[in-house]
Length: 304
Image (cartoon, rainbow, N blue to C red; front, side):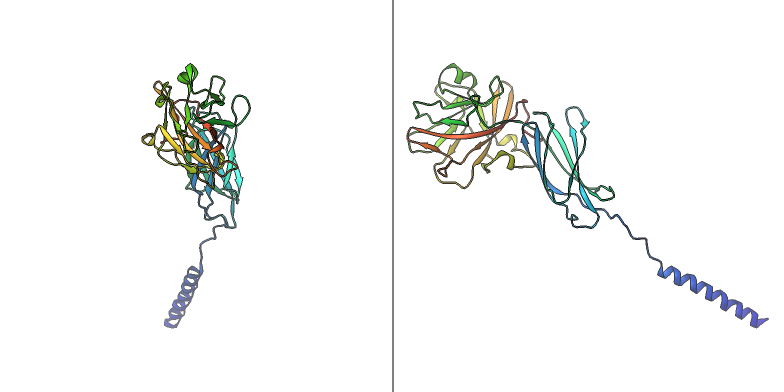
């Protein structure tokens, strides 16, 4: 009997050892769709009826299960979510069309796996599309001549009643009513100054320029940011444009004062074929510009 009990105990111990060995060799199931990280450093730039977005690629873009980027667009005025946009891996910039100028949109970008799992983290930016002025109301490049010129106008209305840029004379009622800036030169070789019309002898409207910048760019499409200059930076009423050779154009931020309203703009001063921002010669020197203009009042391109 004693021998039977011993044999029984040995058998039970063997069974327990078998189960213990199974537990020790058991492994968790392999995650066939691991999470992927979101992109970072999302930035934006305004286009006409569109917004450019750019970002730093996800650190997981080379993962076997990385699929794409998903962009969710929220109209901040109506709280309406637009149809999402999807772009493939390897793409780090995109143009979002079908938007309304002056409306602020929130853009949220997440990474997505091949099986559709979205990243828990995300990149976010708020921005507005804006009117783009590349030519004036006559269909030619926007060239604003210095005050030394006796043959050409030397002021500009950046957004006239027809929604176009219009080069105007730096004189008379038109300038006093709707001049947004003019170009001053003390002589035919000096630097040029872009000045708020309220500083002129025949005082016109008031324009402020941001002390932030200027920024290097040859195209307004390519200057992306995560936020515009702070409102407190709009302290200047004059910008000095030097005659030295430069490698790129320069972008300045400004805003026009109309009563209690502010109208914000980005202004690209183009680099000429002479390598300088100041083009022309003698009395007839000028700056050539392109402008991104927010025609909705008190909208500085993005949330501050």
